[in-house]
Picture 1 (cartoon, rainbow, N blue to C red):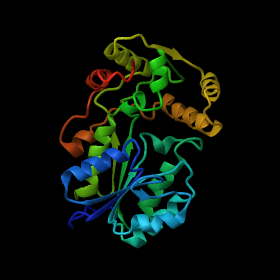
Picture 2 (cartoon, helix red, strand yellow):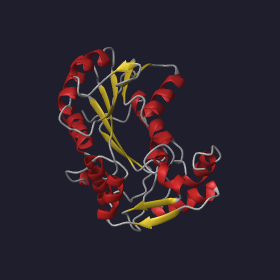
Picture 3 (tube, rainbow, N blue to C red):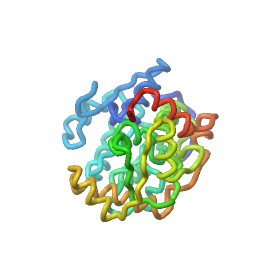
Picture 4 (cartoon, rainbow, N blue to C red):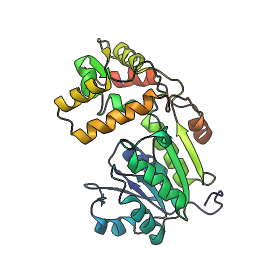
Length: 283
């Protein structure tokens, strides 16, 4: 379905990845409105959901009219799940994907691409969200340890990235899940300006009041470092493929889609970094 909806908003919303980076923020925003029944689903959350255990799907979907879909890396269960979701009464699908995913190769984003395709082919209203790398990759997981150690080594060069706040992504998702007028649209969610990763490291170092050195690595050297740190080969290869996508410039564009949906500008990395540095996370 590619026409805008005119019916009432959904009465029940299932949020996959409900304890994850965007999912938990989506849940918080929806619950703050007090207007919908929100069910956060994950392997260990309030609602049990496991992509590898199809018996958990229907109980999680019960009563849901809208779905925030965060796909697994493995694309194989996605089409069947979307089919079951639609059969159970889901009429609005919001898919978390990634900026430039249409240019990704086999090594990165296969689950996200499968989710986009399944949503488009469904009979439900669908909206695709394609964010850039999150600010929170610097303080919650991916690049937190390197920043604490004072060295960020990546294979990206001078290609810019318009990093986006996961809170802005969640705000967009919550709006699209509950408001009409977004059916059949793809929103590319970027921050207000593009920075190189070296520039982002400098911004964080300045906010934290401590040195952080950026080092440019070859793709092979980056993979070797990940493996030496204990990353599984599949994860190392996926990150390598993600950076190949970035190096090709497929995620470098600054967009105004956050403003289009929310009516305000997206958050900027520098004030965010100052606020987060005050918590001592990079100390």
